[in-house]
Image (cartoon, one colour):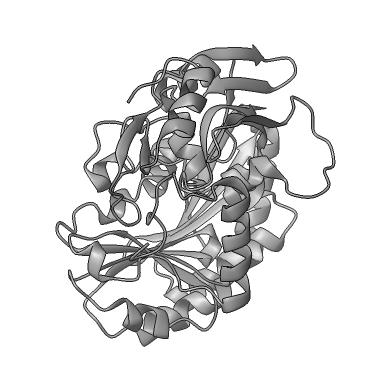
Length: 371
């Protein structure tokens, strides 16, 4: 089903007694568990309702292609500061998908350290609830809210709460220049220490990553004189002799965001693991399985490739705290894809779901095996 208006979408939901699988271009269908339901295609909601470069505000249909919107922002020297990744090569998609898919999965790249996650940039949403009711929440201004912050709830809900038709997102000016400092030869522990020192400094490092066997990388952005000053100061701070990447800096960080370092691991399971940065070296030391990995977010995000079928309990048992998500697997239905939740949090999620979609119309089972 492909509704052409919000009114038609609401009527479809009200009249249906069967569940829906919500898609835009289906590029993220492989994330989470399979959904069995009528396909609800929202790609027709692709209009740019308002773009105000001077106000740094974009209101766009959830079905708009991310690449098209990024090209439009680029013409005004603006961007999504949370740096949404493109998992198409990793998941076998044709392109990076839609704005709605980006919001539903709360996708954020290496710049999340400085800029925050996607949910920190979303200001408003429009859509249809599981009751078949049109709703809107938020506005084109930043303001305090009471009760549910509905736009933030939609970010990371994987389409289980509502069928979004449009979103309002804050955009920012692109940095004038960027450079990446490259330091070779650091162990996992030394790299995390260096990245932590850099992030806590006044050098305003926007991204920090470590690729074992390749090196440790620190990104600086801003006007050229400021970047040069901070670069020299950063080299003194970390006490290492390194190199500067300038022309290839943007390409490198795009590869880090898109999980390119692990794309050669054909057939392997890919895990996305969030931990306190100081825990990252210890977590990797505990995992005795054959693996390939790298650190993003200064060690707070571990990307891990392990042989297909590796028990997720082994991965999660290595965590001191944090959570692990199975992003890609040929046998995903046999695993706990998402971190099992404590009882209190699971109960809260259930109440939120009941508020928006009491009949479980939308993406049933996407986040919970057997539901």
